[in-house]
Image (cartoon, rainbow, N blue to C red):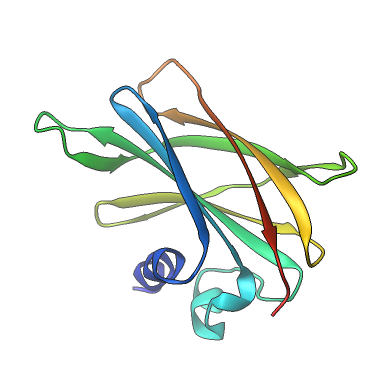
Length: 141
């Protein structure tokens, strides 16, 4: 139940979000400050809730036989870098709840700092890496 609350929180809060298509697959992402989560949701999902800590959420979607996108499992790796090219590796955790599958990592940021994310997603049973790159700036609330 706590995972459902996290999943709902990650997609209903004001966050930077985007997606990139790879044929039958799509990689979706969202970025938000950890303080946007309620204390209960953060605790239930073992996430630190603090100013200066952001959350990046990745989902891998695949078109089914009807052309409808559905979440799939797999692996996600990534790193973040700031304006002065300080690179930090992201430790993604897979969260599965019912049919929903997503990958969440936390990272540190300074308010108004532009962070660039380089993410590699590999759907289960798929040999090709799906690479996305996006940037976002978070501000402390």
